[in-house]
Length: 233
Image (cartoon, rainbow, N blue to C red):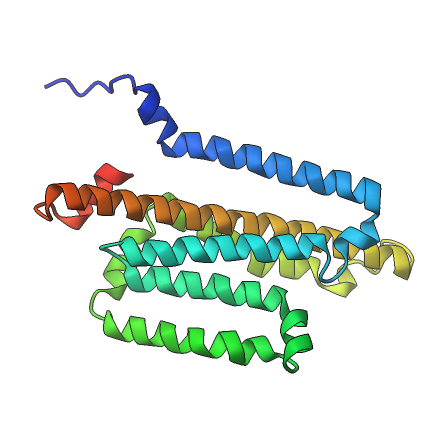
């Protein structure tokens, strides 16, 4: 039996994960080139401020990631609860980044109650409903690129960005005004990259789940879900 890998066709290449990684690299380059141009033309204060263009871009990317993860949860045959939890976390992050909008329309910290509470109830409900398979399905999902991207983004956002947000890290850089501008700009740029990874993660999860659904429909459910997703990857 010949186990030598065959040369992929053009169609297989453009449908592959490495090809999508190349697309993600191009998108990342284009986005940060735009940010660089915007800082040069509009100034660092205008771009890096709270609720400025970069922060709004973060919200858009978080929403894209959340939609992708929710779609994946709808289409998948494995790990539905884990995908819903991930989607809920990203949705909450989007609401947190746009907290000023919620406060202007409602009350202080409104996003915690209007968005966070229903999402918390949803997460608890799906985990409880699928408690027997939750850990096994989650461990299986962690093998896939979407989970890797999500984990890297989460670590980066929760640890690296939080370090950059500490005022005492910037106290020796220069005067207060310059430090404030530099801190805001660096922090927002770092968070933008994390949300970009979350958007890519949501897209990857949706691609895998949708391909699995299509393969399953053609196989008329005669294949095991794990085998289906091996074909879909």
